[in-house]
Length: 204
Image (cartoon, rainbow, N blue to C red):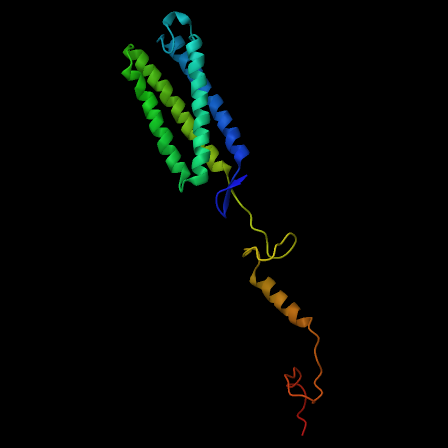
């Protein structure tokens, strides 16, 4: 794990395993979207109309591009979690704006309006899936680091305050420390503190 401050750390394996799963989801969103739009509504998107329900190689390339975009978003999230003050907020804005660009881009190309709308919707759903899934993955990849206890097994000296160490433990330790000291009997030969002065009768 790679630390970002004294109180938190990043579970890198969890972050990137979630990123890989998000890449698979992004690719499947493109394939399922093309199948629904072409097979159910009969709108030719991502490939000519005669290419079939799933289209041609262009559809596969588009799905692979969406998966790569999810991996790039994972790398961006990892970088923000290491350096940015509020990584999830910045990640949401960056990927959200990229999703808007991907949804609007089909309308700038020369294609039938129905194909433009369908392609824009597929891109928007894919972007929303990426940002929502990776936001959850990033939140779960944060791990609160545990501080060692001040007493008991595994305690380290000077490690910091332990919430489990209460006033009762302090008082009992204080009493034990003083009870273990040997008591010195007063013999009258020097003037020092006599612990039995209150209980011994005065000597005249």
